[in-house]
Amino acid sequence: MVIGVTAAVFLLDWFYLAYITSHGFAMKTSEFVLGSLKFSIPIQWLPVMGIVLVSLAVWYEVTAAIFPRRVALESDQLSNLRLVRVVVISLAAFVCVLYIPYIIGSEWFWARMSSASSISQIHDFALSLLNTDKSVMELNPLWQYSISQASALMIMILSACIFGRGTRRIRR
Image (tube, rainbow, N blue to C red):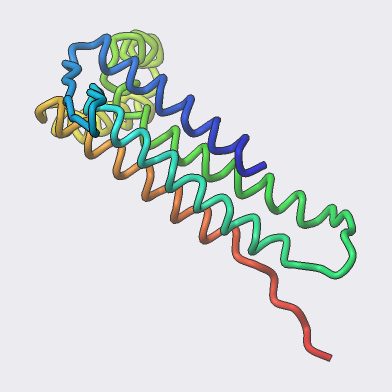
């Protein structure tokens, strides 16, 4: 389960990197020498690798909190459901923080909002989203990338810790 969720986080982050690279984010590489070997790593992949490592640690901790060590291995359906709930909520929060600002700023979103402009509440809500999103989208692309990556990771960690707490056992 830990590896599967971490792979999903990696894929979501990889798609995000591909999306922003296709929209003008310049890829830069850094070369370093280790002994007689010369390596070249794209700098934009460093946060992705960091997110994968932190994701492994977070999901290991959440799994350990939900499934404490037991003498006999038994299938606990409630714990399985709690783990699925934590994974779904945390990944949804990660995706929302990572992708929603770009969806709000897209022409596709505003084409859909113009068709729903007859409902004033939706139109007003969309305009308030645009005003909020506009300040973020005017930043340098490197800042956009950094802020999006860091905030998405923090939201995923926070939601995993909040919803993945272990149950309190009643002492007898």
